[in-house]
Amino acid sequence: MPELPEVQALVQVLGARATGRVVRAVHVTSFPALKTYDPPPTALVGATVTGASRHGKWLDLTTTTDDGELHLVFHLARAGWVRWHATAPTGVPKGGKSGLAARVVLDEGAFDLTEAGTKKSLAIHVVRDPSDVERVATLGVEPLSAEFTRERFDELLDARNQQVKGLLRDQGAIAGIGNAYSDEILHAARISPFALTRSLDADARHQLYGAVGGVLDAAIAAAAGREASELKDAKRAGMAVHGRTGQPCPRCGDTVAEVSFADSSLQYCPTCQTGGKRLADRRMSKLLR
Image 1 (cartoon, rainbow, N blue to C red):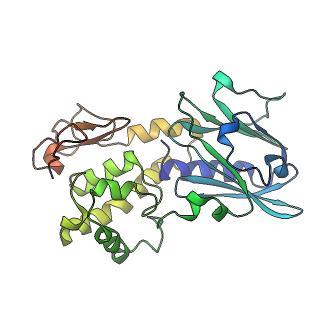
Image 2 (image 1 turned 135 degrees about the vertical axis):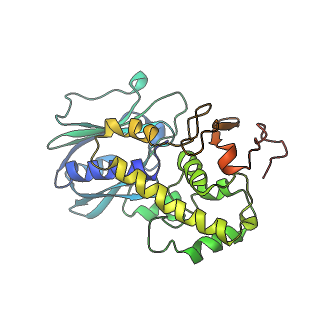
């Protein structure tokens, strides 16, 4: 799933290539992906793109029309992506097996929203204000913003006693961090993914707070300037534990371990994070902390 660093890089790609361009056509080929009907996607035709931005893991393409601003706001979900075309393809596109969900044609170039796999969760909204999208309006604090202070982080840790990985992934608490970067942040901070938030002492909180910014800043720097087609490989190459089950931890050399769930998994280093103990690999088991 694209997370904050990759989404930020896609924002930079779209912002650089689409800003100043006029929308010539919008083709939605996966109608379940379209979550709004007023304004319709056709309202974007003739609009000028004025910029791109990010809200957590949501991308926001801002346009100006004769009637004011319109926003194309979309979430790539687990298997979605953005594909840029320097020259707009001709004809009306079709979805189906191609995985194409939508195509936005500009006066120069075009971009596709695609989604692989059979489970379709990509979400597309055309709105007058990003806050009209409920899941955007309810996002938590941006972890790289000035509002994400140590005091605010302590408040989130103390709000309820939950597993720390769950807090990092909670979009209503901290926006933009998903499964992959929560693994990386916890490894950098040397904290078990199942440690309870209120159990963390001052040193652990300091380490975790620093790891959030450090890991995300490093990932954003690694993604900056890359083509959209290169971002997935760059993300995988930068991981210390996520997706590296059975491989050596780059810090201590121990074997990276995994906990599997029904539809996801997490990775961690036993030596660095759990005192050499392995976490039980069952959702309902008594988990080590």
